[in-house]
Amino acid sequence: MSNSQSDQIKQSQRQSWDGVASGWQKWWRIFENGAQTISDKLIELAIVKPNSKVLDIATGIGEPAITAANRVGNEGYVLATDLSPQMLSIAKERARSLNLDKIMEFKEGDAETISLQPSTFDAALCRWGLMFLPNLELGLTNIYKSLVDGGHFAAAVWSIPDKVPQLSIPMNIARRETNAPLPPPGSPGPFGLADPELLYEAFKKAGFKNIKIEKAKVTFRFDTAEDFTRFTQDIAAPVNTILNNQSKERTEQIWNMITQEVSKYTTDITDSSDKQIPISIDNEALCIVGTK
Image (cartoon, rainbow, N blue to C red; front, side):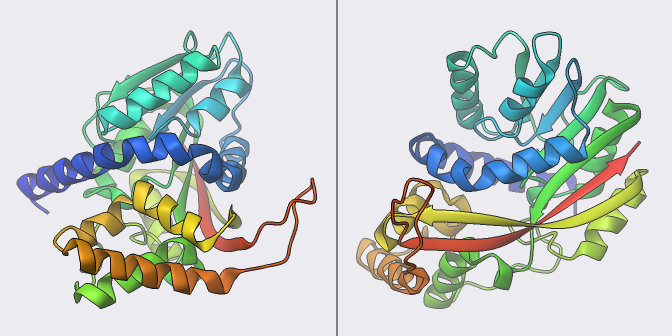
């Protein structure tokens, strides 16, 4: 991929994520109720300790950076990066509200080109960001160089579409109803690194050793199928991109189809407080860790 193509993709991604930042601010608690398990897993895999210096790539509105900041304590340091200034603005606000801003720094930029001090970080993290890199090799190399010898990089990516209904249901219906083509193999996107072998080889090529991949379950819960749809409308940049050129009426029809499909995930389970959770969607993530 040429530099101009890569730059064009990143510019489009920046606009898309900026466009849904307010949605993430609205729904982040619902998302983190499911996703926190992955933040905790990445902290564990990267061996983040008190006083550690930690890098978080593609932090979005602040995860797993905030989880890491709570782990490293007042003598630690966390640098959280993202290409979307609007998402970073929300992350900064969250850090301030939690009194973590003194140990956290935020920097706008993409993983491939952002300037990072070499041999600085004890651990690096990336939760559902690597799949969107136009040049994964360049991004991984940049992260690798930023780590101290013996430092760990832990990342999470989504598994294959069939195992991630949270994303595949709206994306498949949107593509089917708009006749949108599937992206070419290797294109940046939510499922771009769903192949464990591809993921492993990318880490190996960047220089990482002792590479391990684990599967992890991520469960998202909603009060109604309509809530799922509103959530997706507000935060899912890839789905909104597919629907960009549709009329208002047609877009509404497609979202209704998505709601109908998600209603099949109705359950009679309850949470720890005996509150019924009608919609529960299990998904699979791949968590990978490598050592410099």
